[in-house]
Image 1: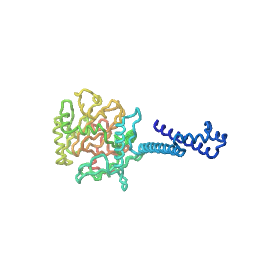
Image 2: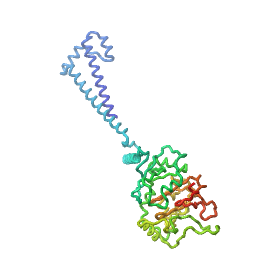
Image 3: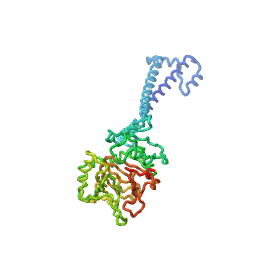
Image 4: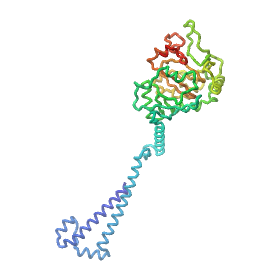
Length: 430
């Protein structure tokens, strides 16, 4: 800085003055009669006879020793000031290099408040990553984003596999036989969740740029994963209270259907029954049941419990692709598309990579114990859980031939499995 330059220049000037006077002093004592020598050692300077120099200093009331003392004092003071300034600058430099220390904003860059906020968020993410670190003894993460669930044997805890920083898509996710999965936790016994429950899929934080980039690799490779801390989902979760849903679902701009099953199994079907002989619908569709009535049945099942062989009710609604971005609030299902903007976008995003191919949003309200029979869909799915919990059992596409999938396109339940995973037959076990 200019101040530092002034101090440094003062030190140099004082040092040169002391050196010049020191040379004059020693020349006076050692070589008083050699004018040539004096001219070589003090180049460019007009020589003053030693006797006249001493006489001039005496007239000014000074002594040669006093001159050196004053010059030396000035030099020491200037040197101390320079060192203090240098150490202060070095201290600030060390602070800037410390981990998580906010850097001062450069001219024309982000304001200091933004820099501090970004530094705080960085520290929060670092803390979250540290909290999610695995248990060295078992190689698992013991803390994660999903809340503990109530179960018949107490509170169910979750464990998570470590994040794979270099994805291995050939061996991810790990597979188990279907028999092992349903024997470990039978689908009919929805309350008896094994604890701790090991989450074997990769789980990423949507709000963490690093983890979001990893999730994109899994999405592009079409390998299943889970992601959390999504603003649209978190906002809908808070907004979709019972009172909010009652108001919106019971409005004149909503259409939904409720299916009734004699037990907890729901086989999908369409209106193609006329093409298949001796076929009866696996469930009954109720056109008169209101959302309010369904909600009471579902809440009673939560609080009182419900057996697998009792009647269950499954409510379904959705928003067609053409209505996803409609601005008219009178369009059917408009609150669904408004609250889930990530699925009703006109621009490509993490969830919708091909806007033209978006088929819409399917909303499912399932009561306790409901099982949707195994099936495959015609395109990619992004599933958002807004309330409660739902168990998914995923099979690789190569195993479709072994899952008793209905292959006849004319069948009302085309693409769905006829196997009962709650009571598996021997051929399915093989």
